[in-house]
Amino acid sequence: MQERYDVLIAGTGVAGLCCALHLPPQTRVLMITKDAADRSDSFLAQGGICMLRGEKDFAGYFEDTLRAGHYENDEAAVRQMIARSPSMIEELVGYGVRFARDEQGNFRFTREGGHSRPRILFHDDETGKEITSHLLAAARTRENIEICEYTEILDVIEGSEGCCGGVVRDIASGEVFPVYADFTLLATGGVGGLFKNSTNYRHLTGDALGIALRRGVAVEHLDYVQIHPTTLYSAKPGRRFLISESVRGEGAVLLDKAGERFCNELMPRDVVTGDIRAQMRKDGTDHVWLDMRPVGEKTLREHFPTIFARCREEGYDPLTAPVPVVPAQHYFMGGVKVDLWGRTTMPRLFAAGETACNGVHGKNRLASNSLLESLIWAERAAAAMAGGEKCREYPAVALSA
Image (cartoon, rainbow, N blue to C red; front, side, top):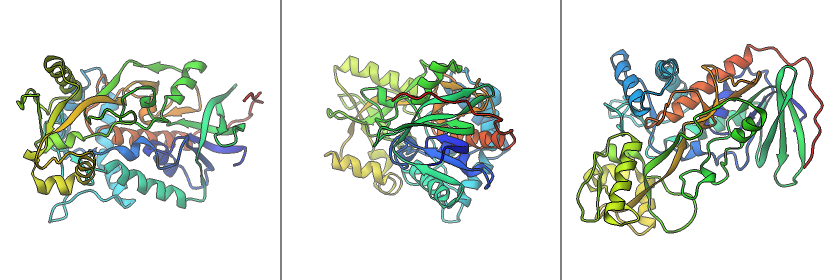
């Protein structure tokens, strides 16, 4: 690891990787990650990624996003995300991402809660892994991109021109040292590691958010935490296994302890979560039941192989009986406040992905908008960095372990 780079990126999920890949090839980039490079929440995304299905779909997609977000969304940000989606999908296909297609080779679309029509592309039930693994593979081929695992960002370096890099720590050795950079991107993921029950990796503990709060960088909507309605119930501690909203989009229904359906499964996540919690209180149970049998064996095995296998590993056969599910922390809509280019209130400091709050999601994220939003703001941040001037001077940093 060198002492100076053009760009420092904290995080190796889709946001960090997309930003690195969009920077000019002569840009020296250092990417650091707190764990292994393939252990980001981007790899865990099951359902899919949204795409605008022609001009006639724009109004519907726009309204669906705003309605799910309780109309607290930044409309300019939503428009930017929707308009850019087709070209971003085309770019992902160019990296080798394999989205499901029909017999004629056309994209297959699925539907999730809050969507008025199917507009979600997917790869089995591992869409995030499919996208992120291809981006990671591409980044590892670039001579200008260096990836350091098990290295965490502790602080940013602030000088007269704004952010000039970050203070990082090698987790194995405990060594703390400065990394100077003309631009820095915070893309360290969400806050799930702070919760007892979460679908997130445990090492995602809002590190970038803590840095922003200490440094006086604007943050927004820190109380906007999304709970996913359906994770596989377990009495064991640790990360909760997500059962994608796409399963309900394909026909699965929620049942109470008497085996009766009690809600509209295709409402936005916060609404379904509220219905489940109310039913649990009414029934005096720790969970409700998700009946996947209406989906059909063929779709369960082909579209949801990971979910199907995990349920069976836990002793449940979704082909013959409902499985127990419970809400758990899933996504953070708040974060470090950014503009349409991913710029924070500190010059030269950017944020993207779940770390950032750009206003797209409002108070509640619409299903499968997260991967798309992360990619687009990362791309925008890279464009802003590429057009910016280098730092003229780097401040000295006093370090303490």
